[in-house]
Length: 205
Image (tube, rainbow, N blue to C red; front, side, top):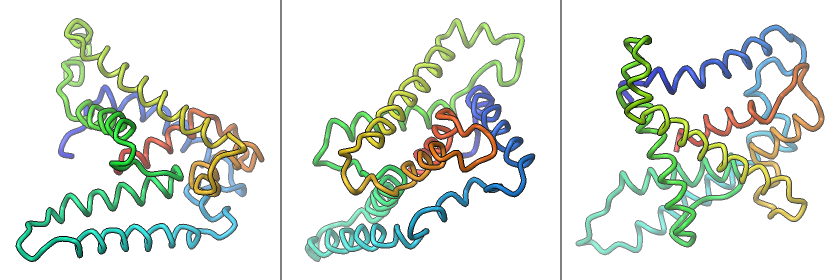
């Protein structure tokens, strides 16, 4: 993306700075939060079957096309990336079999991407922030982040369910919840910080 709205960026930057500052000042105990994946029982290799399975699904889908049909390979690769990221991070994927859920999550993501690219007057003239408020842009931004919070809360509740499917065990979100519950970091790894990582994965889709 060529541009990024400061109005969106400022919301995330403050939270990320807090995480980075606390991590840097607490040496010796899981200094790099990205290393949490290695805390899983099998490390990154745990996710290899997911990638292999989704690649196989893609190959099978392509093989079903006739010689005369046009294949939208770009769309297929995007769907592959989305499926792999969702399954690794959240233990589920959103496909056509769950049309309503897929449509809802797509709408949230598309709106989030739009918010990062849209023009805010306050990005350039801070004293004129009232214009963004009057135009409804700030309310739109807050609504989108509220939708994201609701989506993440739903994911967390699914992962806190003792009867959750096996696919939600030892995925990235599950590992982060384990880190929080077992207090493996020397600072408070709060739900807000977990949601920041959820956002970083979700935004890659």
